[in-house]
Length: 279
Image: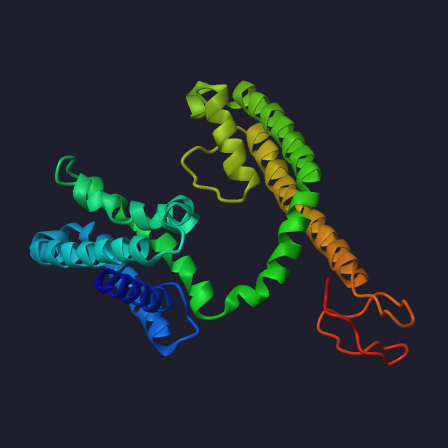
């Protein structure tokens, strides 16, 4: 009897912890997630600051102490998630479970492999939890439209980049012949680097053509770069427009069968009937 009572108490504790740790529908759960996000931001900020030589030399020991404090907090949090999770194995294999584990391992690995603690910046991936805390998951449908548009335009973009690659190789070969090693174009791969930098309008200036013909080719390459940059944007924009039209077509009035309603529409703009829940 006493053992059954103890089991019931354990189940109650797990249920309460599960509501706080995995849920955001309670005040404690929301406070827990917000506090966790604050700790993650502070921890990642400390890692960034520790890479600055002046800060590391002056405050390195203090940063190390705080970093271990955060590591202990995240370790306890991870163990609590395993304890109260309804399906611990599924949590461990999930995206957040893997990230949670990777966020604490570097500190322990640094005890044996110095320098491994800088991989703690992976903790910033845990900030994805902010979508759940701030109820941003409701906007995932808009994100899915963008994702589907990117997938639909994948073949076109691939062909575009393949064509650009051919142009880069041709221009690089020409510049290697025209300028030569004496002007910094010591090899075709080096010329390819210059061509990519020029087409993307970055222009580091570490390699510059010296001959008149080379400068003319460089000017043509720059103008070509401005023309090329706009093409992927146009491809993606067209696919997004088509995807938005397809999304609208999913809203069909069950009374008059008219399609094309806005996503957040409640009533049919043709017959006034109430629309069914979006598919």
